Image (cartoon, rainbow, N blue to C red; front, side, top):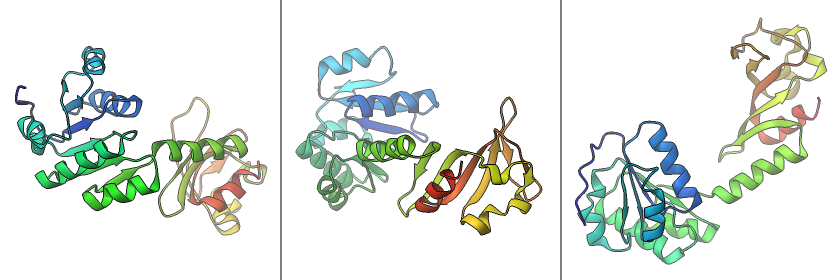
Length: 223
């Protein structure tokens, strides 16, 4: 196994190249980051070799294999072995013992996430759960896009309700009436408008709003 000789700036090693891991690796490469992608399955590595500049077949539960690949030279590590608890935990433990500074671990359950955190993961990701909740908000509500953070704070894109039409944000005062903040406005065929007190909302505008999830849901339901 050849030692990696990548230039390690704000670089990432992605371990586990299932749908989630491969998607993360592709997105990072597209954004210009140096990425070392790793999976123990030779067929997966061969399949992705045409898409990812640096992809290797290696067993991440083998501490010596990780050392040989110089993974500690990378700024971040993403462990996306969500379907194999033991391999995921051993990989996180290896990375933590090697002193990797920023470890992200994919988990399929709260128990998996707690174990990953205890053995050294700095961040735990629940992609299936997070996406399921996001889709539920979009399907059952009036929101066009929705992102929720850990503390119940959310950002959403929703259609401007009638009570805001042809009024400035100072006049409609949705922050006082509904407890949410309009961050910006997206108007068809126009650039993004950063919201100010004198910004006027037009019928058909899409509002980018921030606030607690329950209050955003209530505001979106006004449309």
